[in-house]
Amino acid sequence: MRKLSLLSIALASMFAAGAAQAQQGGTRLRGEVEAMNGSVLTLKTAEGRETRVALAPGFSTGGVVPAKASDIAKGAFIGVGAKPQPDGTLLAVQVLIFPEAMRGTGEGHRPWAVLPDATMTNATVAETVSRVDGANLVLSYPGGEQKVAITPEATILMAAPAEASELKPGAQIAMTATRQADGSYSTSRVTVAKGGARLPF
Image (cartoon, rainbow, N blue to C red; front, side, top):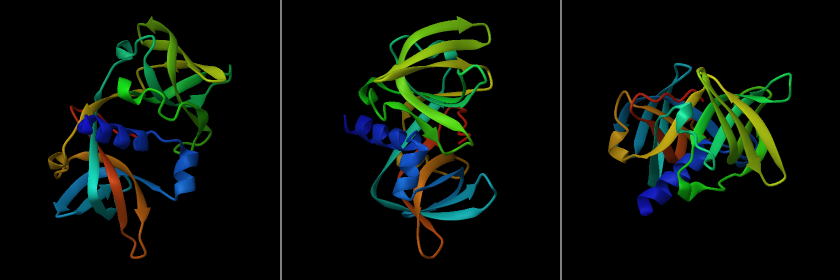
């Protein structure tokens, strides 16, 4: 139960709305682990910078693994980062299939600061229509619904357990961190990609 709770915290952080992240003063970091020395992690960011991150005592580690559009069932609770389309529907950029224990996490539809004009929708799948190249979904949340198209270009992820020992050189990770006065960062949650998963944002 505790592992599931820690996983939930890490994944909720990963897919939090951009507005909430801005309010908390967090900085989104992703990249590859270069070294792990005690409680300090050295990360080569996606922009090529070497960044030191202090891991808070008792920090949590969560994982994500690749999933497919066919894994998204009616009634599932998912988070979708998407771009608006001219017809008012959404085009999924990245999707997380939440574990049942996280149903209701960040539920709703809001701006997603990770990409210009993008949105984040955490909601229940009310309808799903499979296509050869993906799926069309209707996402329902209190006060509204969104129609979402999932294409092969979308990154689809599913929650998975992870241990701190997996934060080794070469591992792909993402986190929301707090910048320190000396230019380094600190965080209490890290998400690691497993099984070939990629973390685009």
